[in-house]
Length: 242
Image (cartoon, rainbow, N blue to C red):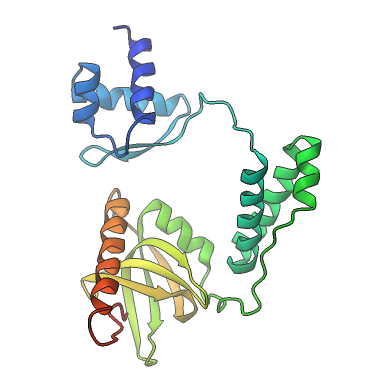
C-alpha cells in the first residue's frame, strides 16, 4: 500500500466508529506498526486535519479539512438559530457576543430563502430570570479547560465558607440559575462542581494535565449520575458540595 493510500485509509478509519481510536487498533486495521500510525497522524495534522489525543489515550478526529462544508435543511437551521439565541441569553458576555456574530455570519452565507427564514424564524429563546453573572473571566477559564491547564481560585460555598482551590477544569455546564464548572479538585481529591458566580481571583497556572480531560470528564459525569440515582432512594443530600 502506498503512503498516500494509507493516509486516505487512516482518515476513513478515524471517521468511522466511536472515538477515541487507539494506535494499536488503527495499526491492526491498516496492517502497519503503531509507530507508523503516530507518524501518519502527525502528517495528517500538518495537512490541516484537527486530531485530538496522544499516545496511550487514543485519537479523535475533530475537524476534517478534506470534507466540503455541509448545507442545512430548514429544521436544522431552526435548531441552530434557537441554540445560538439561547447562548445569547445564558452565556457570559464573550460567548453571547460570539453567538450574535455567528448568527450574522450564518445569515450572510445562506441562500436567500434560508437567510430570510433565519431573519424571521418562528423560534426564539427568552430568560426572564437569567443565570447569576460570573465573577471571573470565563473566556480565560474556557481556554484553560481546552488547553487542559490547572487553575486556582478563591471559592465561597453555599454556607459562605471561603477556600482557595486548585483544580483540573473539565467542562462548563449552563444551568437554570447559574453556570457551573465540572472539575477534579486537588484539595478534596474528588470530582466537584463550582458555581462561576462564587469564584474570584482566577489564576491559570502553567501546569498541564493533558491529555486526561476527556476521560476525567466522562468519569465525572458517570459519577454524578450514579449519585443522583442513589439520591432517589435515600434522604435528600447535596452529594456534590464543593
